[in-house]
Image 1: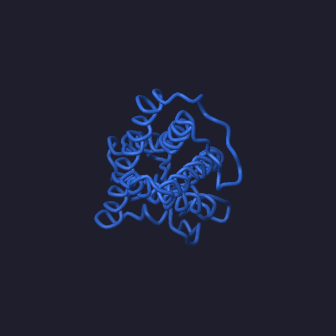
Image 2: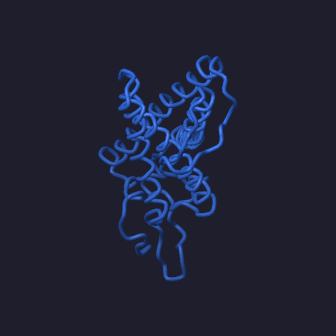
Image 3: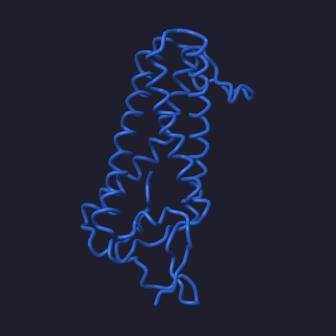
Length: 209
């Protein structure tokens, strides 16, 4: 999952976060919880999607499809909450070593992949919801809350357009997420610049001195 960078590379921890001379180390607990909860749900939903499509038609397969749809709606809602939270809460600055060493193309690539992941967090479940609606299978969230059909029943639209969109966007999300994980691990194990700590529970501030 994405780890935000400031909009300008110079926005590192040179300025104290408050009058006591403390600087931000990590995201807040809400952002961290949303990050890891979404990461776990997306991995689980992608894995479930790959597994269930290879099963023969049976009550077990139908049950897994329902779980997959419930997870998708939950991911959609959590992604919207996370995006709104991100817009209202500025992320902590990059560690000084990371900001100084990161070339412009990496910062540009990070921002682009970060924006793409947010887009896919919303697009993948929306395409799945539309696909289910077009097939004539309503989504009943956790078996309790019937959700409105996203599109009218149209099986040709479902198979020719919405299924490829859902599948293609899901694989794209998986690829971008893997690149993101690889980049974070590279920063953690090779560069050792403390970027991973920003999204890990722990003290949020430390002395700037």
